[in-house]
Length: 95
Length: 493
Image (cartoon, rainbow over all chains, first blue to last red; front, side, top):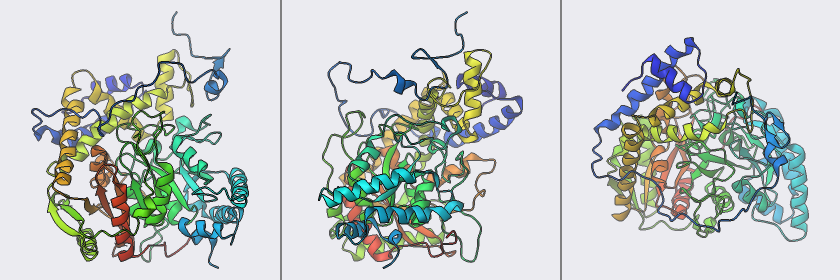
């Protein structure tokens, strides 16, 4: 499979990465090189094979459903680019 | 007495216990060695004040007879690990001012056992690369050079700063991470020992996530015994990582030097890839011969799905990376670039904060997970992964104790040599290492010889799940046979 330039723009938007027009052609070539490389998997017969969900056999551990962390907003916000009144601040989302 | 920085962890531990030098003297020796080594670009941050304070605390504990297993040992830490109050960036501009308010479990274990933090080590951005050239801090440089050449070579990657620092004796050992070969390939390129333990052996909590089903932490060290000492401290159960194994950590040093007589070692015929250099092929045969001489039986085995490991890895890893790196949106941490609205803010922030390789990988991951392609790519790759793991399970069930393979397809290459137009050229570096991450198995890279150009080459041993002990026993046989490989020319001093 290979991607066209419209797909490159769509994927970039899905990934929330701005791309300039100059970058699109370049990215198309690079993405197609990688996709050509993984196309080899087409020849593997996986009939009846379960997809891997856990690489080591283990039961997911359970714990009490209680709050066991938190209560330190200043630490949580310490690296925020913008914060106000104990909250993360972002541009207006709803008009 | 030789320089303190030339002592292995094993020897330094003994010297500290006997009071031949203090932890502070040892740390100061390393801080002095780091100073002139700027051309290696191995450290992206040094923490001399913290290091000296930690060393003084170590001296106090040694005086009280309360020394831990790593008491006073100065270490470097890959920048993937969150270290409390110490900038941790994954060598990405998007995290360039990130100072964690918490400590990763693995590094917390190291400090619990008395180790000293010298600083944070260079790596490929978000561990995406095999050369450390994608670091936002610029490439780390291999201490090794080709015979008669001063051309700078890569130290491998992604844990390239870690491997370079260990090889240059500007830390006693280092903590790295390995998603597709990021501990073992740089170890092989620098004449050091690196082990990626079984998935779940070390906690991933507080390690900046790349591909969660593949990422594991592990040590890079100057000897097999040093690696055993470090892994013993790094490993262990952690309720904060639900995939971290709740099983006791063996005393790995006991396995170093244990007899390998009667062990059965598999040589996978599929690893004889087209175009393998004669040098790598003969190193591999030499390694098999050393294990035979130590009493092991060497047999040919088949791992039929080997050739599909790399393509399926690039689907699984990039899909997981696309999800994991969605968190860098300019809201909770990292750099923000303003936009007209919140979506434009996200897009500009991520376009400016991520480097080219990271943007490329996120986009591929997004594509393979997008509607209409999920089954063809991601689901298919996860099925192939089941087959790759089954290959190993069948070999182990047939009585193979460990597998011997090359660590890398070549010796270290020059900076800029593989960063051309085709990203796949760099991906092929992982051909011998990536299968283990896909199967969750432990693997150790041990230096085994020199190339015709005088560069170190490594062999890799692959073990059963949670059988790192066998790898330490076999690794020591290789080390005893091949000798150790200290860097012969310290041109940066």
